Length: 408
Image 1 (tube, helix red, strand yellow):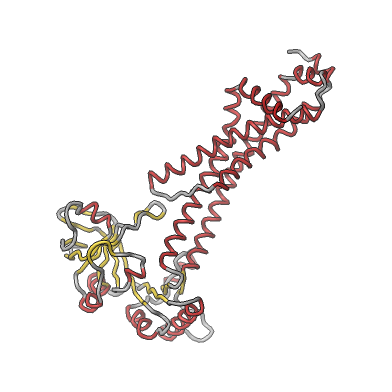
Image 2: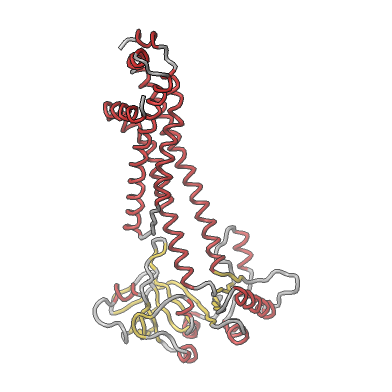
């Protein structure tokens, strides 16, 4: 029996039992859809995070009191015991790090911003040194950024994100208008370019003020995050980090041989942590999805066994007409694989559509890659073949005389 003829017979058999075929495919569809959806979402998030972090440049590193990602309560409480980083630490690095081309400092908190009787919710208020806009990968779309004079004098100038413009002052030029942050008036001098969303959360809902003004308003007990750029190659970066490490250990009186009570992190650190988290998430969800595939495969095997029983006389007739065991085996394997492959195709389409729907609703990034589509189809076909071997083998081994005597 030719392969094409076997494929044609398989399609005819599936079409003759459309409802049963559809119900059989549900498990495969759900499993493949879950695989495609997770891979699409994780690929999109990986691409987005990599793009955003690479925008800071491979030559930027941070000095903070706590690690950017904390995996246990013990680590959190250990970090909480550390002394905070102060603005004087930033100034020491700025004045003494010879390998650092730019140094900035950042403070932030969430609050509401009011303009003309309208208020924003959960807006991030950032205290910036004048260099932080560039170090934070923010270009000025309108107006200007901060100047050294804003730092020194503690002016009430503000640079805002586009969420503030769109929600509070959509009409007219925002420059020169007065907004109130926790009741304190600030004059808008600039608007940052649109940053979009990260994992569904807007990156444009922020107001930046000079860090000196921020501390005058909210106090001096918040730990400062310090950013530094080491322009040059990897060796320059390492020298800059070592220089900052020695400087900070000296300022914080870390004894020789004792661990430092601050963190120095680069973009590679963030990317490695993110990849570990996304990989763990992917494997967990893929493990759950594999259960659906196994269930779907068992259902396919069950239906194929029923099909063998129903078509016993048909198998006997074909064997009597010269069909060999491998012909019957191939026919049922192709039927099983075709059924699961159809479910895989539907699952791929459904998984991509759900991922895109999530992007539309919450802004979570997606990235459909061809290899993930082929992987979904391959997994579906492999499931059908694996769970179709036993029913196909049973059909192939039927005695033609006994099969012809079977009742219809």
